[in-house]
Image 1 (cartoon, helix red, strand yellow):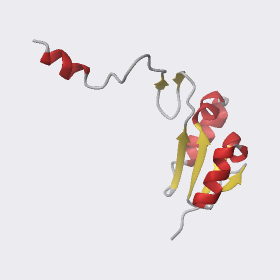
Image 2 (tube, rainbow, N blue to C red; image 1 turned 90 degrees about the vertical axis):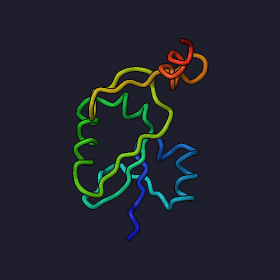
Image 3 (cartoon, one colour; image 1 turned 120 degrees about the vertical axis):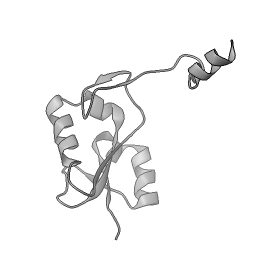
Length: 106
C-alpha cells in the first residue's frame, strides 16, 4: 500500500516542494484528506499559523494513518500544539551530553 505524500502551505510552491514532488511523487494540497496520508509542511508556517489552523492539523493526525511532518525552517520561539514545545537557535556547537562532560571534570 502506498501512502500519499501531500505538500501543505508554502512548501507546496517552494523549490524544495518541487524536489519532493519528483522524489516522492508528492502532490500539493490545500485540504486534509479523509484517508491516510503524510502531510509535509514548513515548521515555521505551522508555528506562525493561527491557533485554529494548528489545532485543525493536529486533530487530523489523531486518525490512524495520518502523519504531519514539519520540516525546517523552524521559527525560534514557543508553540502550544500539539504539546508545549520550543524551537531555539543554538549559539556555538551542540550542547548534547553536558551532564556527561560535567561528570568528567571531577
